[in-house]
Structures are given as C-alpha cells and as structure tokens.
Amino acid sequence: MARLVLVNGKIVTVDERFSVRQAVAVADGKIIAVGTDDEALAAGGAGAEVTDLRGATVIPGLIDNHNHFVRGAVHWPSEVRLDGVTARDEVLGRLRERAAGLADGEWLLTLGGWHTDQLRGDRSDLTLAELDAVAGEHPAFIQVGYSHAFANGALLDALGVARVAGAGDAEPVPGVVRDGAGRATGRINGGIVSLNAIARRFPLPAGEPEAGVRAAAAYYNSIGLTTVFDPGGVGVADSAYDQVAAVAGEGELTLRVFTTLGDAASAATPEQCRHILGRIRSSRPFQGSHWYDRLAVGEVFYGPFHWDHPGVAPDPRKEDVAAADEILRTAAEGGWPVQAHSVTGEGIDLVLSAYERASAHQPVRALRWSITHAEGITAGQVERARRLGVTLQIRSMGVMGGQERAVAAYGAQAVRAMPPLRMIADSGLPWGLGTDGTKAAQLNPFVTLWWAVTGRGLGGEEAVDPALTLSREEALIAHTRSNAWLMFQEGFIGAIRPGLRADMLVLDRDYLTVPAEEIKDIRPAATIVDGAIVYRSAGYGSPLS
Image (tube, rainbow, N blue to C red; front, side, top):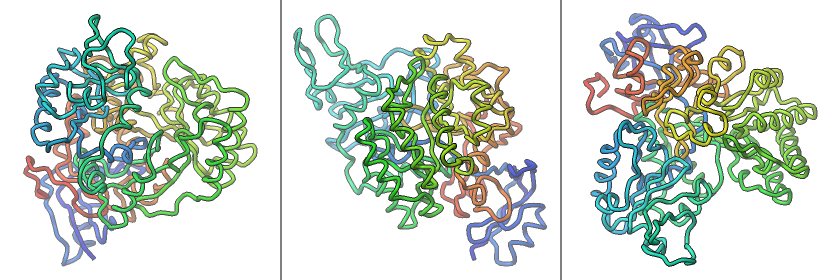
C-alpha cells in the first residue's frame, strides 16, 4: 500500500469536535491515523513517505454542492476564467494572453462566472473595439453571468450579425444591441434565453472531447475543490456526461463528480413528463463509484412548476402542479433524492407544499431532498423544511454583484439578507455552501468562504448584512463535512479522520488565523485526492512541491 505521512503541521480535521491535530497518515488512499507526529509515524510504518509540513495548515478537500462542472467542461479548452478578478485591466489582460495562444479558427470564450460589478474602479462595458484589439480574427464571446455578453466583430460575423443594420432587418440571433445609426455595439442582451441560444452555435474545441474534462478538473483542483455535486441544467447533452464517465472509468479523474439524472430539465409540458417519469422508473441512484455517480433528480425537475428568478415567482397552472406531483411521487417511490431550484419565497412555498404531498405518499426524510439557492427563504419555511428533513444548498452568487433585479424587487437592505445565513446556520437544518458556477457564478471556494465570513462582495461593497455572517469554523464545515452529508458521502469524504478517503488541501496560509480579508486569496500549496497529490503550486516553497 502507498503510505504518506504528513507531520509538523496544523491539521484542521473538521471532525465533529473540529479538532486540530499535528499529523496525518494515509495508506492506499485512506486516512489511517490523525494525531501527534509520533502517532502518525507509527501508523505509517517504516516504508512510508514522510513529509515535514513546516507548520502549514491542512484542511479537508473543499466540496461544492452546486456546480455545473459537466456542462462547463465541454468548452473548457476555449475558456478564460475571470473568477475573482477585481480590475478591468486584468480582465483584458487575461483575454489578451489567452487569445495569443489560440490556433487559427479557435474562439475566445468566457462563459459567465464573473460580472462587471465585481470590478473595483472602472466597471464599464468591454467595447467591440477593445475585444477586436484583444482577440483579432478569433471570435470572442465574453459572457457576464446570465445577464449579457460582449462580442467582437469576428464573433458577430460568425453569427451572421450585420455590423450595420437597417430599420426592420431581422437579427439572426436575439439580444443584439445597436446604436441609433444601426451599428452593433458588441453588447448582447436578453439574459439566459439569448445567451443559451448563442452558446448552442459555438464550435466544439479541437482535440479529444475528454481533454476538457481533464483540464477543468485540474483547474478545480488548483483552487481547492476535490468534489462537486453537478445539478445538471438545460442543454447538457448526454455526451457531456459520457465524457466525464469515460475519464473516471480510465482512472484519470482527479475530481469527484456527482450528478443528477441529467435530462430531467428538458420537461416543460405535462406530455414531456412521460419521458422523465420513465427515466426515473428505469434508473436507480448510487450505482456508480466514488469518482462518478448519479445521486438525485433535479435541480429542475419540472420548470413550469418551480422555475423562478429574483422578483419573478413561479405561476404554475393546475396541470403543472399535477405533473410536478407525479414526478416527485415517482422519485420518492424509486428512492431518488431530489433537489429543486427555488429562489423566491413564493416558489419555496410551492416546492415545500409539493414535497409535503410527496412525503405523505412516501416519506422522504431519509432521501435528504433539498432546496437549492433558497435566497428568499423565511424562518417559517426553514421550520417546515426541518420537519420534513429537507436540506438547503446555499450559493454565494451575490459575491459578484449584479443584483440589480433583486434590488429592484426587494430593496438593497433586504437583498443583503438573502440568503439569511445566520438564521439558516442557527436553525439546526442540514445545509451547505456552494457557488452555482460555472456560468451563473464564480467557482473559487475560498471566495465563497470569504463572502460568508466577511459579508463583503468582490467589488468592495457590503454583500451580506454583518449581523448574518458566519464564523470561519461554520463556513468551513458548510463547505466540507455538511456538503458530504447532503450528498450521502459522509462516510467517505468531508473531514480528516481515520476511515475516510484522503482528500486534503495543504494551504499557503492559515485559514483560521489569516486576516479575514485574505481568506479569498488563500490557495492550495498542494491538493491531495484519494491520497494522491493532484496539484502542486509552482510558486510556493512547500515540501510537497
């Protein structure tokens, strides 16, 4: 068995006592001892590889409970990530650097994960001229969350969009913004509908399809992620799941990826439910491995029933409610966990009522059904969820800004209490932290931890009411052990204790004592998954580098 012993460190176990120890021993991918240096060395035995951490802090691998990894991996080789960037010049610099390395015919893409509101200083739109200068003949599509996008001339040409259009001319794609003279400005509005329509026209990256999976997993490892729960979503092809499964089957996946049933998001009419019901009845959860598995139905199990946005509550018809009820009853009968996208208070009421009806038919407490996002949840709804055994998957989307629609609907003060972190943490309800990356939000878990602890947004504003923020310990539990429980993996990952798999991060600074403002800047010196070092920081003098 491969043996690794890490000594002379600060091992933040995130076990039930949140104990901090000195050393950890690993054999065959599993943690076999946590304690003093002598205890770990004795467990490791004479043939172990011993590494002196020189006081470095080790925490469990971070788990994102809501991350669209499978969809994001498809175009990853063409992407420029802007997670956490706070300067406009750096945005342009990253785009310029990536464009310089593109081959002829390749596109330059940023598919969400950032917002101009996260910038400090100049937050103006990226102009067509700027992107022409950055990308040249490479079509450039720079998506801002699910709000809008910026394009260069080559992108407009590739989509068949006229640089100058006459009055009444039809647009080949929705959302193109023009000035008074009919000139395309390079901005594309229209939100998720317009942006997804354009995304369907992107060429696939050159090379083998699985390359995107490997590259995306490596990036996730580099920012401290060792596990993600992917909720599916509209427009994710079966081939995208097949690519992740193929990499896992080859033993080359360095990120644990758990997914939902996949195409359930495609049901939009009661008639289309028949396909989804058949899929649920013919499948079972937990049939995969601890690298890749399907665990739930959702996050969209029937859009017309529960899909909502800030300030825009769902308004289902009677037949939509009936269709959703049939899906949920079928999931409960088949032993399927369920997660439901729900943002508004009205939407959460609908979902909880449907969950209650399903549970009356077949109790769901043991299935750990969840509500994901839940920004508008109230104390009364938390209590209803607690009685049902429903869990919450809370996202840090507000850290990027871009909350105009929510502020318009509820007011700025109310938005700073959405989600009500302190109330949720004090409720006793099982819950965890995630991001909703890759398009809707940024990916970095340390940015999420910073947001939850400081209440700040990347743009410098107060994003969370200071009275509602979490302690560092609470936030770390929510991004590790709690998420493992939400995903039925608590006996496998989520903490550093004997018997669990060795998913750990050696940090470049101490999460528990570093100034709070620096939490977002923490990076792994090394990321360990299943006992193997899958990432090493080139710029840090770690014994593991």
